[in-house]
Length: 358
Image (cartoon, rainbow, N blue to C red; front, side, top):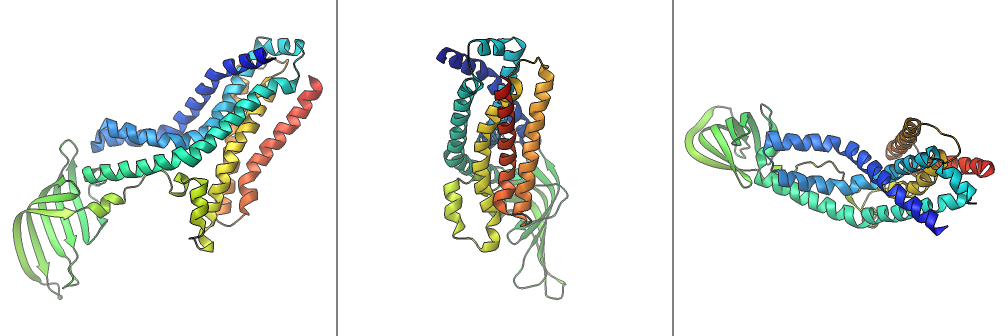
């Protein structure tokens, strides 16, 4: 029996790798497109871009491993059925339970690995991603600048840039409003061009105008160079992972005591999600065997479509429940766990039916 178990585990490896890679790529598409823009348009180095991408991988893998495992098992056992290997296993006296057992063990291992990702790797990756993102923003503030748009988030400054030369990172036609404590009107600074030095904008060949409390010009002047600090703006650079998603269950639980009652929902939803998604791996693994294994010869395309349908139905139900729970429209535990309950019920019903037939 151990020979058959080893054979199943050997045959299922490559299809699972394919499945995980496929779903990971699908989840990464949006991030990859944004990063390509950063390389081409914003001038971020390829090395920094690849490092950022590597830090995005662990939280994505925590979601795609269950899907990829399910698809890989479906592909493997569909091939067993098409090649009559499943019939041979039955002829050897293998029960359905014995056929499922190696996949069950593999699914449990995958579940434990996802918990390890969530509790150890993902929090560390999130911290490194935050650090790297801030580092890029400080070293290359042009990364966040937008042409012909007022930016008001820079301490006491409001900034407008007419054009940015991406090749050199030089800004043309710079307009700055600086808050003036002595007047309700800001100081107006008009610069010919600007470049960046660490976390500051270096404005060159600029004129400034100061106004009194009545809005009349009080002082004007000209300077060759002026530094505008941008560190506060650089720290606000966004990444595509919410803070709570980058925390482990232990970190979230410790954070709960610092929150008000109305702030608890997103954290409690995330805790339940971080338990429900890994556990779904076990049900998906068993379900993959049950749907693909048998004496029928259904097409590969049919099983592939069926697996995608089940996966995306699970995702839709899970995400819908999470949204409702966060908004207080539905109790958290039923909202998050309904997808797993439905999956477990479907797996049990199909198992009972298959056990009678085989």
